[in-house]
Image (cartoon, rainbow, N blue to C red):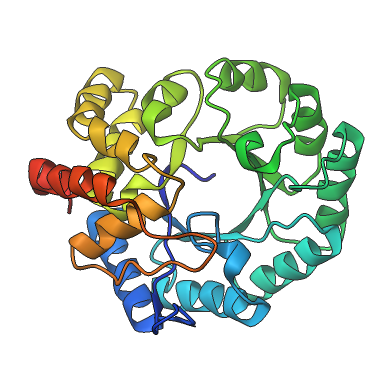
Length: 296
């Protein structure tokens, strides 16, 4: 069972036009996460700018993450695509590389109906052996997986959970009622409401902000696991502004800039993403000074 704080890792780039992945820095970022008590890593998600990675880069980022983690924490590899055949290839690679599970988003742009969504996940499931986590993010993929469709997908043998980024706090309650599979994992895909999501039946978060403040977010999730939600909420509120400002512009632009300010990575992005505005840079720099004691 996956639970706790999973960091949606940024992918550090180098070169004038961010043409290369900086694997040395990537490994340092992973070690920082492990030392901070993070429960798991998610390479090649949206925060990792997976749409701009070449196939070979995508494969190597996952391989390096697994190799660096050395089994110390779990690796949930992002392997989604709007092409089912491509998602199959990416998932098969993650399985071969030794990932603990695959995080697979709903197909974007194509706008499949509910039956198409189900068949997409079933097709991937039927030709792989790796545990699968559904990723529901209608804000980016346009389509939303309905509760009844989640239940159908969850009935597949190796589907072990869902990352839900709808912000709908009624969902964990309803899915807990609908899905009969023991230990079906519900992970929040929204930092700002993660504690309340857990209070209602979730068991963790896949976090953007934990790139910046991994220790306090891991500690917050540990309190949730122990059902100490009042304490978890109090800790969560200490960095509430970080959760909000990480999305002051399209993610991962703000978190990449914060990483640069903290000296963790270059902060370079690949087009079509660009650096945050000068106005927001001022706000983000001020945030670092205000919350510096928690940004470890």
